[in-house]
Each structure stands twice: as structure tokens, then as C-alpha cells.
Length: 245
Image (cartoon, rainbow, N blue to C red; front, side, top):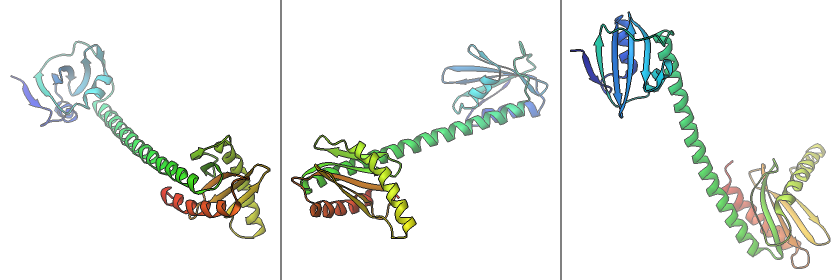
């Protein structure tokens, strides 16, 4: 009777290595989760593998991932055909590489999902703060939190003003004024205030996080600059604490 065992006791990679280093000619049957794979060895080289309709190296790469199941070895059995020409050590190295890459991809996917969840939670907090700010600011029309790359990460509006469009334009202006302030050696830019015939617009750099700024738009008739500046600074401080540095 041939050798039999459990994959808990001998992993498939070890099973293959054992057959090859002992220069066996044998037929190895591996069973796992209602699947059966056949491996054939000739004088210490793996020459054929099959799993259902599949044959060759890819079968080996597949079953190297199996951790549950059983195996049996029948010695002195010739392979029905040759579908593998690469050395057994080369196949095991390639299989290990693929498994490592898949593990890294899975880990990266989990990391990305966690980051997305964290970002979702952060944007929810930002949206809530903008909502609260709108109730404290006279004549509030729109507000947004924008990165220096021009991408808005939170916004809200109560009027016809498009906060995303305003923020995109203010990004260009913020970069221009920041550069001018640096060249003129007049200090670090904190905020910009604009006045049109209909609105007051203010962009304020978030304290401690110069990569983001808060832009607010208020109605000129019902709002005032003092309230705009005061409330903007208060909420800029609070928003800055939510965004990771």
C-alpha cells in the first residue's frame, strides 16, 4: 500500500519536494474540497499534473494554495503524458512568488477598504461641520473644504452658487497669492477675501494643514464680513482637526 497522509501534516510543496529529492517515479493523488488533482513524477522530476479539464504547471500553482485535504502516493506509476518541462524547483519558486503576490494584493485591498471607510467617516464629519457652520453664518450660500490639488472633499450649498466651481477657481487664486506672498517675503498666506456685487467670498487656509482650505460664500445683502471672518476661522480650526495630516 502506498503512502497516505493529510495536508495538515505535509504541505503540497513539501510533498512535491520529497518525491523529487528522492528521485521517485510515482503517481500522487491530492483531494481537497471535492476536487482531485493528479501529479506524476519520473525519476525525480514532476512531468504531468491534471485537475479536471486543466493540465500542466497551472494545476500545480492552483493546488499549492490548498491547505485542507488528503494525499496518497503510488510508487512506480508512469505518467500518461508529459505536460510539464520546467524543473520542479522552478515551479515551486514561481508558485511561492504568486502566493506572496496574491497575499500582498489581498492585504493592499483590505488597507484600501479601511482607508475608504475612514475617508467616508471623515467626509461625513466634514459635511456635518459645514451644515453646522451654515447655521452660524449670516447669509450663508455655500461652503466647501478643498485641497490644493483643486479636489473638494466636502461641500454644501443653500443657493445657486456652485461651491465646487468656486473652490476650483479659488485653488488657482490661492496658489498664485501664496507664491506671490513668498516671493515678496511678506509672510504666510492665511486667507483671501473677495467682494462682488452679490456676494462676499472668503477662503481660509486650515490651521496646521496648508494642503486644505475652507471657502465660504455669503449673500452680500444679509451677510457681513465680520461674521464671515469670525465663523470661518472658528470652523477652519475644527475642520483642521478632522483631516489627517
